[in-house]
Image (cartoon, rainbow, N blue to C red; front, side, top):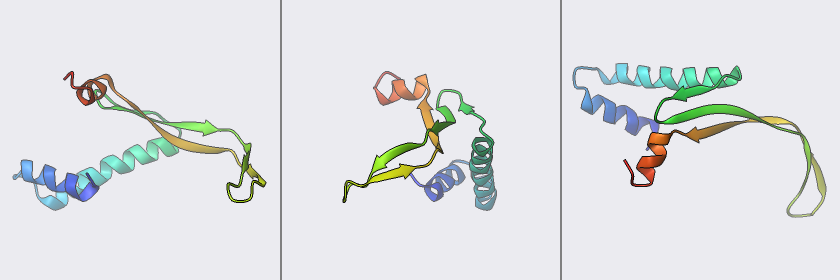
Amino acid sequence: MIRSELIQKIADENPHLYQRDVERIVNTIFDEITDAMARGERVELRGFGAFSVKKRDARVGRNPRTGESVSVEEKHVPFFKTGKLLRDRLNGRG
């Protein structure tokens, strides 16, 4: 599902809300999650999962074409850990 499909689904299920308001709500939620992660904070949505930031140390990698050693800088990457309810539903237990 993409963002526009999510917005449409929420708007369809809530006819009392204007689609532009639903779009603003969805965008605000995603912006807040992104901003919190940019600050290094963890975002937990109970039953769904938790978003966090992991640090990857600098390392020496290899160029797959040439085999040449390449220096890879330290970086921060997003990480998502599923919640128990989501895991159970995916495995047919919920």
